[in-house]
Image 1 (cartoon, rainbow, N blue to C red):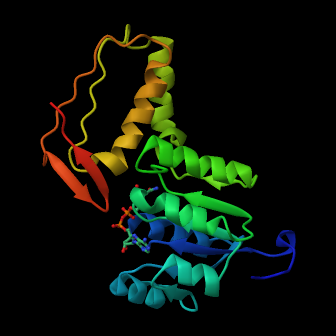
Image 2: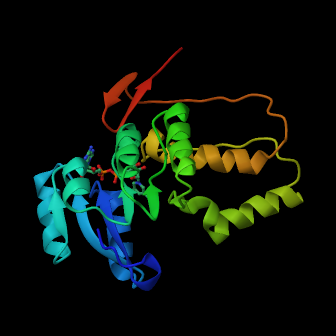
Length: 210
Ligand SMILES: NC(=O)c1ccc[n+]([C@@H]2O[C@H](COP(=O)([O-])OP(=O)(O)OC[C@H]3O[C@@H](n4cnc5c(N)ncnc54)[C@H](O)[C@@H]3O)[C@@H](O)[C@H]2O)c1
């Protein structure tokens, strides 16, 4: 750990999970003068090799435990699958962190997400959850337009999520829907799903209930 006061230097940073989400954080950290990307942990050897080639001088580890012990940083980005966010985030919070990023969805259940936020709040740390949909101009325009009544009375909202998995991408649509309807009463919700009835992988668990 660098003991220089954090106000006088870039914050050191590490990423757990070097896939699509983790690469976005690694790239942003490495492009920023305010951060120094020090390490990435991923249990996939190919990912570690790719990171080592792409980011010269960045250390790679096969587990977050090893990385936190050997290369603790001021900031940790938790970019594994939602089912392991809680374990990794709580382990990261044992470090003297200056801040933490936890990918959306915060956890694979509401309870897991709540526990992560409670633990972060308990440490009084700033947290970032990358969630671009409600920060972009176009969806914000749509929200304002609908609220101003530009399209008349809102009577139907149809969401289609064809090419992205419901756990990692569905959170965007649920969140957008909640902001779109505000306090308006909902008459009914219809969901149609055409995928496996039971899915139990690291990326998430899904059970279709009739
Ligand atoms: N904010 C965004 O724009 C954005 C984009 C894509 C994904 N995500 C989020 O990032 C998270 C990961 O999704 P992804 O699409 O990057 O998945 P991915 O499959 O592309 O990558 C996940 C990586 O994490 C590694 N991994 C998994 N568990 C691990 C563990 N316990 N320790 C070390 N490494 C581990 C895997 O080997 C893999 O390389 C999800 O929460 C997803 O919603 C966010």
